Image: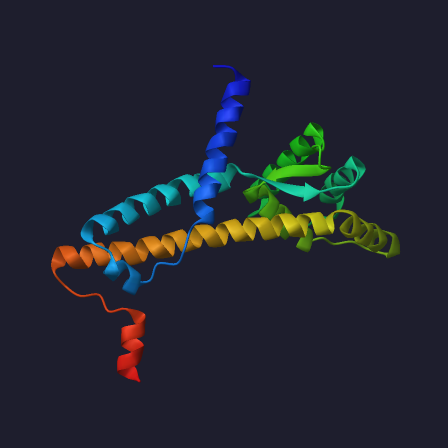
Length: 202
């Protein structure tokens, strides 16, 4: 199978997974309780599959960082080389982020003038930027200039990442509610919904 075909299949699989997650709705204990046994089992299997596939996708999914000029991305690399403090604990992470950013810069900007970075690297890059240090006017001037050129793009990429992470979190919350109801039915007990508990306390 050619590399092109594999890439097309990967893109299609990603699109299908993201389309499924766009349809994720909150399932409460009361909602799970209202399902028939067959519906509950189907919901469990679908949510479990989504949790696994979407979780894996987030480890490799590329997030777009708007960059007007590739020079700004190269400036970011230089900034990591000179102005970001690291510790023994985060040294491996620092190296991994730097290498991924270097590879992304080498690949160049896409047609939309964006740098594509995977989620874990983007999140780590954001955290490392918060640890930036410098001395003197010229250092802070360069840092502010860097943030002006690439800061918004990184923030927007982080926003997309946060939305995906919240979606995955909701899938797991739903899965927990469904699993609780499944176990309750197997044991022949009732799971009280939150709204029922609140009405009793009132």
